[in-house]
Image (cartoon, rainbow, N blue to C red):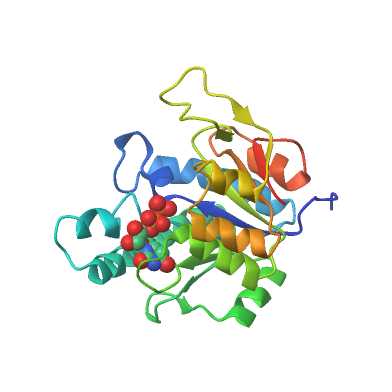
Length: 238
Ligand code: UDP
């Protein structure tokens, strides 16, 4: 097996990535093409764990700002991440990849509960572990869940998959003169309020020296390049 830069990673996939052009919900073809990329990476031998967002279905804060209780709205958001996790699990298994969905909120008829030592065992056996329902706690985000699970599962990096090539000084989808950074420190991200992950997630990564690789999910082969340690996108570290 080839030598990889990272032996175990945490991939953070936002819910929107699963929506494709329709911008909402789950677009099966988009999921299939993402999962083909994930399957290629898994077949290289990297131990792959994932946290998937829910913003394509439900985002707690947007609904609570219109009057709904924030905690209830956040629980709905966490349930949305479970739907996404099941969709990704289905697509990965159709490609012959063995997976386990593990939920932070107990729903044992649907998926295994998240138990750290069991999750590590799945990874060691080459199964893709999809951590669903975020942290299981309202007022958090799936970015924070990804940082937390990455630490618990002893991942060597968080791979943050996006629609653009890396982290820019301004939104590259709105400004043609936006400049991409190759390298950033955690403090750069926090002080300049760059859109990598939310500040709670960045702080967790900073305190635990966990590198964050930000790259374009829709460039074929990119996940494999990152895992091999090639210079792709932006790397955030101390
Ligand atoms: N959420 C939560 N606690 C968590 C993770 C998520 O309450 O630990 C809720 C929150 O309402 C959030 C929604 O689930 O808006 C979907 O997650 P997120 O916004 O992080 O998804 P993404 O933007 O990555 O698609």
